[in-house]
Length: 48
Image 1 (cartoon, helix red, strand yellow):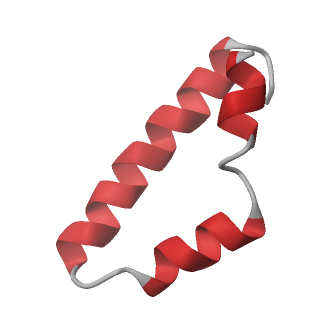
Image 2 (spheres, rainbow, N blue to C red):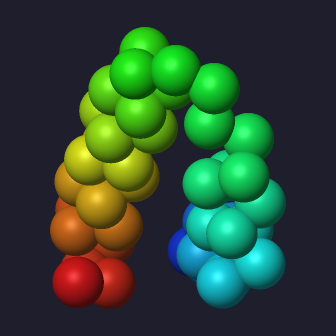
Image 3 (cartoon, rainbow, N blue to C red):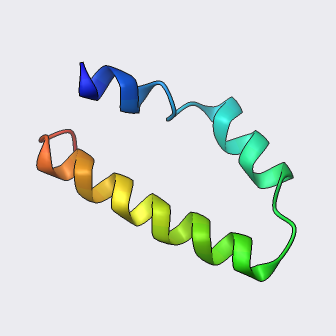
């Protein structure tokens, strides 16, 4: 269930909308940190 939930956010439209919402360098840093954490969690579940 967790993998299905996380996978629902890994779509091209999700990323496109997030890129459109970037307003500052702080936003970019936040998204990079969050992205690394998501990748780490997916690695824990064996999805990478």
